[in-house]
Amino acid sequence: MEFGLFTVFDNYKNYKEGFERTPEQLLNEVLEQSILADRLGYDATWFAEHHFSEYGILTTPQTFFAVVAAKTQNIRLGTAIVTLPFKNPIQVAEDYALLDVLSNGRLNLGLGSGYLPHEFAGFNVDGKDKALRFNDSLAVIEKAWKGERFSHQGDYYQFTDIKLEVIPKQKEVPLWIGTLSNLGASYVGKMGYSISGVPYVACNSISELKEIIDNYKENYRRAGHDEEKITVSLALHTYVAETREEAIATAKPHLDLYLDTRMYGKSAKYEDLRDREQVLIGAPEDVITMLKKYQEAGCDHIMMLMNFGGLPHEKVIKSMELVAQKVMPAFQKSQTKKELATTTKG
Image (cartoon, rainbow, N blue to C red; front, side):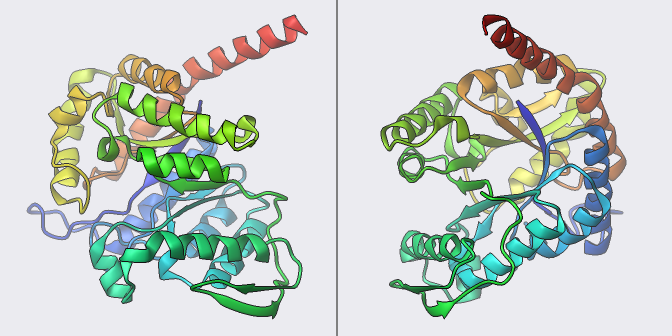
């Protein structure tokens, strides 16, 4: 299993007395967390993109990632997600090709069709045909990244005889499509892309999640795609402390704030997510046990959402360090054993 750090960039001005974190402060905290994640051996840092709300204040991940890329060495830079119906696909292709070059080939590109009504209204885009817009836009990006002169005459986007001068450094940029619905996952499987999502929004249990992932993989195989390329990336709220009691006492009020003020999904509290096994909050051994369940369900990459609901920066840092010191090694050892077994068989 791979480990990522995921930031939604939710920032609340007046949820309690004395909390006065400015957007600049949050951005600087996330920069420090991303640099630390690189040093600690996290595989990726993922940034959400949102507009017109405190729910998520980062509007251009590519800009922020350029700064992160200059201050890190190995960590991959993932979008979760770029909402294609709001953008000109050529601009997306140009911006993220440049980011891939500047980061020496570290781009993970997560894409989606959008889900928040106020964002569609803000961009004056009709959400009824968002899936069709998404497909047309993705087709343009894929053509543009071949580095050849091309034309495109789609239902929503038309381009004639153009060519990008800067294309991604990676021969094949890893792509994720944001979905965890059965129908959406089936469709993405047929298309041959990886999937990502937030389990508590789409499912009521790990077993239900496994059914969706199994169905996705079956459609992926039936379409003739190489299953070795699949990476199922799932986002879970995470806080790790030395004891379970400390972790819950610290994280619960911040998770409840996040859930109270989110703009999508099911109405829930910490206890609901706990009972559905959809949080990673506890001592290291608690988190390891839960992660193994997600690994068995088909999760390859865990996107740890740690800085949620105004959780203090110093608490996030401590949790990150504990994950690196006491959680990651459990999975690195199991991976090593698997590799040794393969080598022995050979």
